[in-house]
Structure formats: C-alpha cells, structure tokens
Length: 158
Image (cartoon, rainbow, N blue to C red):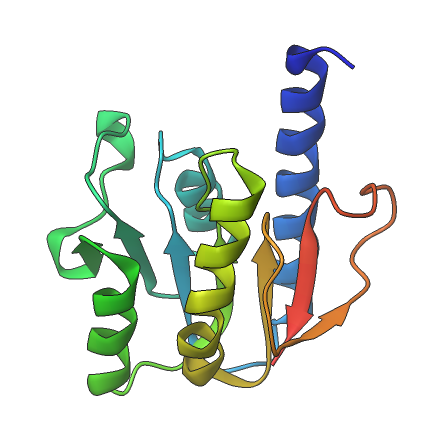
C-alpha cells in the first residue's frame, strides 16, 4: 500500500471513528480532550460534531492552520503529562478523549501511550470513550464502527 493510500485510510478511519463516538457519548456529561493538535483537522471536526462541549487541546507546540487555533483558555501547550495533571487538578471530567500523538516509530509511540494511559483514564467519566491511533494500557478496548480495519484506530471505554 502506498503511503498516500495509507494516509487516506487513516484519515477516513479517524473521521468515521470520531463520528461514531460522538453519537455514543450523546447521553454522557463531560468535556472533550484532543491530544495532538497537528494541523488542526480533527480539532476542527470535533468542534463541528460537538459544538456544545468544551474541547481541551494538548499540543507540545502549536503549529496548526490559523482557523484551528483553540482559544487560549482551552489550550494546554507543552508535555501531555503536565497537561493531564493540570486537568485533574481542575477537576475536569471527560466524556471523550482523542489520542493522536505519535512520530511513526512504534516502540517509542507505544511506550508514550502506555505511560500516558493512567492519566487519561483518571480523567474519564464512567462510560466515557477514547479514540486512539496508538494502543492504550489498562483501559477496556471495545469494537468500533464497521469498516475501520483492525489496528488502524482503537476504541476504549472507561
């Protein structure tokens, strides 16, 4: 598979997964967390899907499209460990978290997602959902929507 085809498959899975999860959390209280802003495409999609929810964003260094810069009050710039601790200290509770960190080196990406998993889980409301491009540890993995190839995107329930 070409890298272009792989990217298109990843983006389709991401969109379809987020659309599915937005419907699944309709009856849950809680906010949203986007981990990894990148160009801002998924954040922009989440704003359209869930306009009534506060969306927190964690990014090491913001470098996204100008239309996708989160409000300063919702942006946690820096390392995710510190951001998760800050959200916990503020009593933030999440209905949805989207984990979109990764550099494409499995060993490093999996180590980071494993390290951050407990902090993410601690913020979730019971029944809250996590969509992730990396495997998480210690959180119940569930099946996602039809059509997403296994391992392309993972879905977890707190």
